[in-house]
Length: 206
Image (spheres, rainbow, N blue to C red):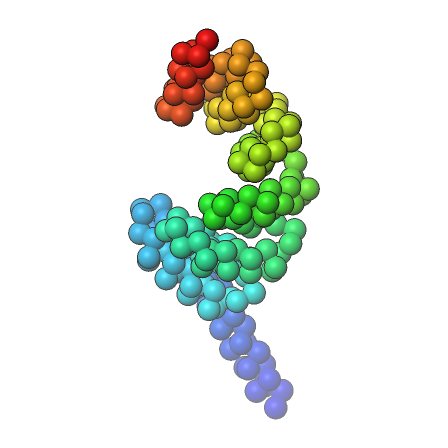
C-alpha cells in the first residue's frame, strides 16, 4: 500500500508538471500569435490555457486583451472582469478594463478603473494620461487638466498628454496655453494629426 501511494503521488506530480508546461506553452503560443496579428489563433491558445488553469489570472487577462484587439468588447469585458476577480492586487486588468469601458463610451466606469489602477501604482504616466482623457470626454475639464499635468510630470515625452491638455485648455478658453501645449505635442510626436489640426484652427482664430 505504501509503494502504491508513492507511485500514485509520483504520477500525479508528473501530471502536474506536464500540465504546467503545456499551460506555459499555450501562453507563449498565444503571445506569438498576437505579435504576428493572428488574433483568432491567439484566442484559441489562451482558451486552452484557461481550460488547463481556470484559476490563472494571466490567461483571462491575455484572452481578454486579444478579444479587445478584435473589438469583441463584450467578450473582452467578461474575461477582464474575471482576471480582476482572480487577482485584485494586479493593476493590468484594471488598465484593460478602463480601455474597454472607454471604448464602449462608459467613461465613468473607465475613470473608476484607471483610478483603481493608480491606487495600486501612481507612477504610471500612461494611466494618468488615460484618466485625463476619460475625464475630458466626460466634461470634467479641471480634473482632466490635473491628471494630464501629473502624466507630463512623470513623462514629458508622451505627446498624447500634451495634445489632450491642449484640447482641455482650448475648451477652457485659454488659447495661448492651448497653443503652447499643442505645439509641444507636435514636437514630441510629429505624427499626431489631431494636434496639428487643433493648432491650425487656433492659429486661424487668432
